[in-house]
Image 1 (cartoon, rainbow, N blue to C red):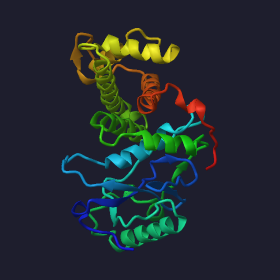
Image 2 (image 1 turned 30 degrees about the horizontal axis):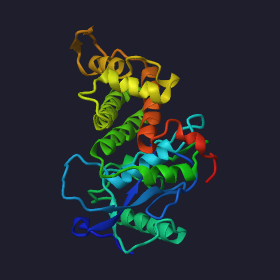
Image 3 (image 1 turned 90 degrees about the horizontal axis):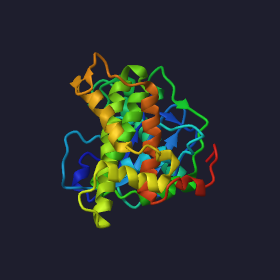
Length: 305
């Protein structure tokens, strides 16, 4: 097994991305033919089958197929049974796609050994890991965080299969939802910055629903129309008559030091605002992906996979 240097020369390839110890995970593997999460005390990583795309974004930090997999892990947790936060490194390794089944234990163990050998041989010169904090636990004095997480393997797989990796708005919104979770792992110092990620993610859901309303014949749907749409679909969880409008007001307060709401020396939000919006968006994206509110209720959940 050898890592490849120029994956863009291939139509398809496998992305191998280690997770930092700032990730908060369940203490077990999550396996799929096209994407898997490998979890041990000394190294955690994901593998995902991706395809080449012509578009280039210098600030792209992950591939759409990875965003879909990360999102399926995050959204696949029962809302009453913990949370998963994925904190991947920026620079991954790559493997040639020869049709491997990415769920096979033997394959994943070989990948783990290859990652460890690659990092060990290039700790001083590697551009891949230029910050020791982002090394796997094996190489630093840190441990991965595990929680009692109610993750449904069937629901997670269902979500992963449903996520359209060619939907720009969906992938963009999910990407910022994931990055909000990453910033939360640094504690309250970065909660204000994490909220900005949430507002971008929120705006993506706004545009996704506006597109759907236009497809149903509504001309120029407003924020209020989108709020009413969610109110109709969800009922009480979206009981705010001005759901998007009120959160838009909060966004203005967060982004603009001086606005129609006055001057603010610091972001004038409460920590609970971040938690509430994050939880709302998880259910919102779940609905946008599956077409069903509270779709998780149709699946069984367990703390063990």
